[in-house]
Image (cartoon, rainbow, N blue to C red):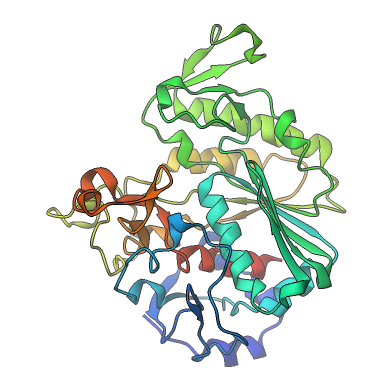
Length: 378
């Protein structure tokens, strides 16, 4: 694995050289340990990255992903970064990011993994903004961070399936009771109008292992009339509904559209040959085997995204985060999280088989790398 001087290489490269096929495919990758994390919950690091101008915690992190605050002692998971074999992934610059967003609305749309990427981006830029020049408005479905000096917003809209479901606002924990309106998106999409940069994602809620109850028409008739479909079939129908909305509504001259691929889960330690492990619990190092792919990423659904996007009239940039995240068994929130709004008790922490969260990521952490990719595309 080759450690490169990214700063000097980046100075020699034009922006277009940064975005190559390697960046799009994310296959030629090296994982190296850097000397300091980009940002921390308790402040920011000036070691090597020279980005931080003030100290203090990011006030916008949910407790669910604040692993250090929740008791995680090891820190190596925050010190790994990606090096690409054939191009250079630029360092994240909050000033450049905010300049690119000046006068614009950016909205992340999707599930809790997408919310994590939104929080990551907010925390990567907010510390350079004076306190009186920024604000956060949290809503049940729609949250907005405002950078007033830049006349910019970084927003999140909750739509875990993208299409409408009976679990959008009042979350239904039992997947057997969730019903999707796979042909309806308008109640969500009306909130996406007028946005300059849209970043969509939908994956983990489709991975219940069950058939998806899919409804055509209204919920007014109760739960009658649904059809139970294989997840990949329902996913394709739902994404076609989304694609039809984008093609019929979005003006590519004024709005850029992105789609983030699936964030892998790490529920089966045998995937990385730790037969005595329990999910991702107590994992402190990434998988170092190149090309590692576990059972937590469904290539069928990834192919659905690729097939639909390539047929769309409006250009959609796919941000492929899946392979680079597959290696990061060490970076999930694990038992350093909360459940039903409460931090895990000592008894729950001692039962990782049932309580270790190997879906969501600690912040700072892996979603910061996703945002480095996103900024490079911007």
